[in-house]
Length: 164
Image (tube, one colour):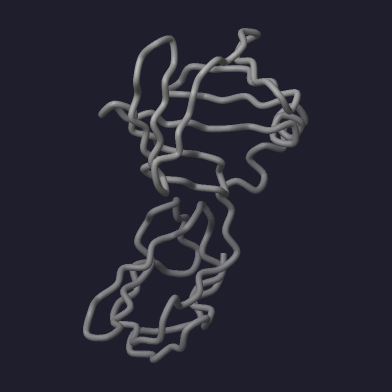
């Protein structure tokens, strides 16, 4: 059993291995895998072009483009629903422990200090690598506990830069 939220509409999905039902109705469609990330679907005698635009396995969120329109799909399996029922669904969601250097480089600027609260996507620092400036952003929500580097430091790939 799954729950899917598609552009803020909720759907219950059941599968017994042979067939799929959505909100209790059997799903009768033909799907042809055209190439990686592209599909051709026939549903109710209508043709649809579907493309996987973006996937985020950690949050089970997928963005599809179907006949030119974008659809955001968020899936919840039985474990996600159990965690939600127990009130633990946000416990591990966007929490971060540390940020590591994705490549060797030079720290040219710090955008946060110890004690700062950051949200997913907030800029943390600028790392210069191969003569390009790379803004490293927070992969989740948290509070900066320790900054392990300072402006001007050289770092290697995998070096812990910031702990939360």
